[in-house]
Length: 127
Image (tube, rainbow, N blue to C red):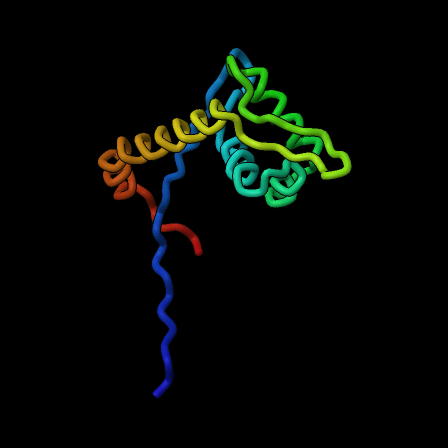
C-alpha cells in the first residue's frame, strides 16, 4: 500500500511588530530585542551580532542608539584586553526587555478575536 504524505494546510498567521519611537529614532523594537536576547546569553556583542548575521559595527550602533534613548544605559560594555572584553545587560536593560516581552504578549492577546474574524476573510494562499 503506498504511503501518502500529509500536506500541511495553509495556516494564515499574524505577527505584530512593536516599535518604541523616541522622536524619529527607533529606541526599541524586534531587532533590538533579539540583539539583547543574544547578548544576555552570550555576554558578547560580537557573538550576539554573529548569531543574528549582522556585523559587529551594526550591533554596536544599535547598542549606542538604545543607550542614548533611555535615562540609563541598557548595555554595559568592557573593552577587550588580556582577558577579552564583554557586554551585559544592565538592570534597566533587563527591565526594558522584560517589559517589551510583556507588551508583545498583551498585543497578541488583544488581537485574538479580531484576528479570528479577519482570518475568515482571507483568500487561500498560493502554494
